[in-house]
Length: 389
Image (cartoon, rainbow, N blue to C red; front, side, top):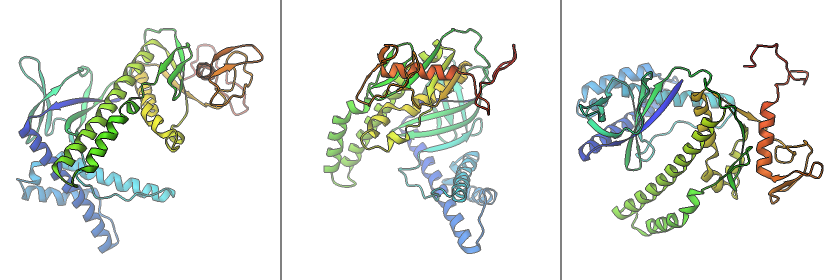
């Protein structure tokens, strides 16, 4: 099981300059390697692979100790593998008939991370007082916000040092043993229906409010964008205005992630099974009336958090087909058609009156608990003592 722990770094001014220099050199290598691939293909009609490029840039690195030589060797290898993966994806999409998306050159605004192999050019360190710091070759030891401890049974395999806005973060990729099945069962199962009015409706009858972080900050965002547009293009004041806009977007993203982390933690800790609707938010993201609310809610991030936290806890998340989960009655199963403006489910057959989203959440849980169907359409039965999984 692979997990990523993200920590905020606190480099000083000198260390920030060194990190910027490493990032700049890495971007130059990426663009030079891309240019080399294009030139070799135009001259010979054949491509050049990772191995040949590594030998070329390895020699260049040795010849320039003050520039490219400052970049760690394994970091340079990861950089060339990143480009190789881009070309692999390009040819795969081209063969499948999808939009190919040829790898493009990276400007300073589109290149923000450096990769390392842990223990080679980077290391997590601790002083005599127990304070954690992170060491990067040719940068030094940087203070870090060590907000959660790394498990003792974890092995750090990969490291990404990245810049987000004006801040620097380190992402540690950990290899953890598989958790297995949760030992202490809660005996609770829950269905979740995602929505825009309420972020989530639970089969227990609880409605989780949608905070709408981005909409709450739209007025301030518009003022900052107007202010930036009035400054002289490329001036220091315009750059500072853009930094303020980036900080506001980062703050909104952090608020959203913090809220979703707390909700997903509570749901995973209190249930043995979580049923969700297998619904892609793509159709909402492409709708000009719903796209802002859909992105603001973060449905994809919420589902991702539920799935990886459930895996770590040893419980199951089941995604079911969302067809008719809103129209069907969760009590008697009859179909009760209703438009989007109708927020209450009223069944004429059994008399059930319930919030439409809670009714959908109960249907989602019921569908998740149904036994799987065979090819004949009949439920599959298992002998006593044999598990379904």
